[in-house]
Length: 263
Image 1 (cartoon, rainbow, N blue to C red):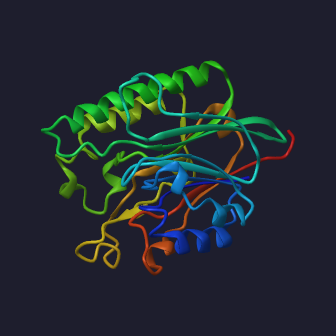
Image 2: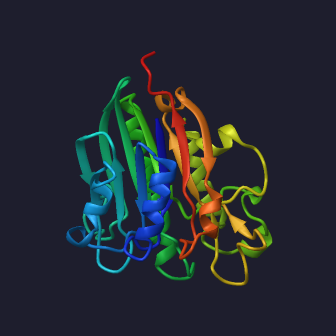
Image 3: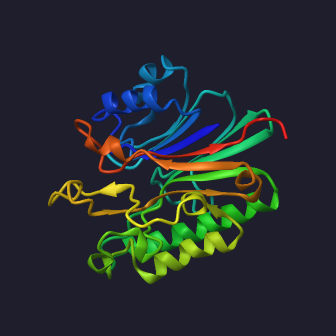
């Protein structure tokens, strides 16, 4: 079973790229971030024609998350619990039924946090606290789940081509990295690093200064797995080649392969 995450950076602007990748990769579930579309204007038909059910949580012009699934949704929840005043569309959660039982999948777009001397950085850290609280609840239920998305966190120096360039940035600040480690310390498995310990493995290359051509990338898109999901992990792959396509997102898809057969 193939579960992917991809910050699409505008679903309408990247619709051709998105459809081409879906046809090529054929994921069972795809989590999208930065769809930059309200729900009613999301181009549903194009994805439905490929056999996907859609769940979206959007807002006009920025943010927005979605889940595409070839399996029907049993349950959909929009918004990260813990702050009723938070109007930013950054979190959607859905449950599907597989041969091995229920699987919960989250598509999340964690706040960037820059500039760090503004309210944006405390908001990022509070959001991560709420995410940790949600993860604790799900872990208590002892179910298989995947928290997939753009975390806007560079976990370790190995996850940046030039880590020195990110010192002081919200993506690499000690507070952000510590909060990310806090999620792992709950018992979650970071899929890519469970399968690949290599350097020069990235999911984002800026549009500026020839970052893609120089492989000046960072790894900020992650899939965190509950123990019940991690037991089924068979591999994790980054489709870096998509960054070279016409009108690309500055992120690329990353996906996991889970054993979906009956134990």
